[in-house]
Image 1: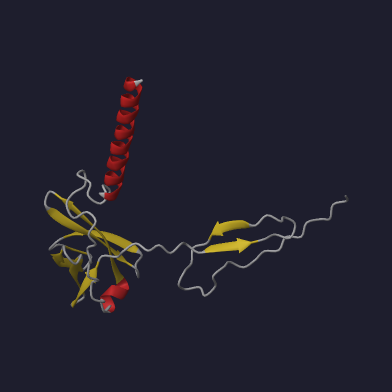
Image 2: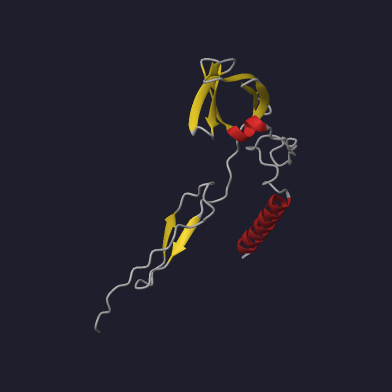
Length: 172
């Protein structure tokens, strides 16, 4: 009997130690002090917003759309909105009267010259705005269909003109 009481006491002591260890582990907040994460992983870094860019006459005509670096040479994608044409122009290079120089990597800006005018262009950023979607419902079909409709700046309409199709009545 004496042996059974000793076993019970050791089990109780082990249970107390295990619950103490569990409480200590929960209070240490291992998630915030993980040895597997880099130092300073949970600190918030405030990134200052770039100053607003005033668009000049060249920025209404040209868009700075992309950058690629090959063999240490930067090339820039420019799109002429009036001509609906894109160009890849190397830094300090020129094509079709457009020249590019002074690439600023930190601000993602280039200086573009065309027809004697010079202006800084900033790399365009992606937007999360969706493409416009037109909703149409036909007379005979209760299912709504959605179609992507390209919007042009020249037309003031958001949606194409509706076409009405009259189906012959069916006898039930």
